[in-house]
Length: 123
Image (cartoon, rainbow, N blue to C red):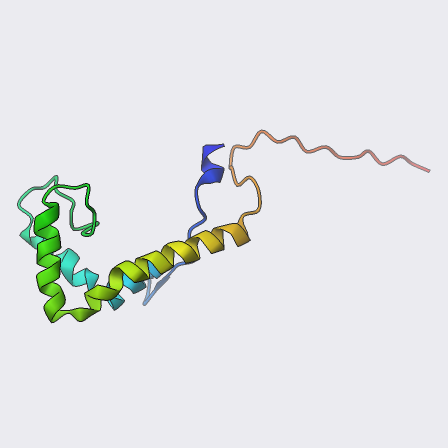
C-alpha cells in the first residue's frame, strides 16, 4: 500500500519541557545557520502565500535567483551555510540507511491481514 512505501522518519524527541524538537533536520538547520536564512526570508517576505522560508534552497519556488543571491551574500558572513547542502545530502543518505534497516513489512493501521490460529487438538 502507499503508506508502507513512505520512508521511516529518523528518531526525534521533544526536549526542554517539550519546547524544543530535537531532530536531525533541526540539528542541520541550526548547525549550519540556515535558521537565520529562514528567519530572514520569513520576515522579508511580502506575500502570505510565499513559503520560501520553509525551503530556502528550493529551485522550484518563486524568486529563486533572489533567494540564492541573498544566501550567497549571507554566506560571506556566515560561512557555515556552505555546509548545508552536504549535510542535507548526508541526512538523506542516513534516512535511506535507517529506512532499510528498520523496515519491518507492512505498517498500516487498517491492514486487511488475516491471522489464523492453529487449533489445538486435545490428546
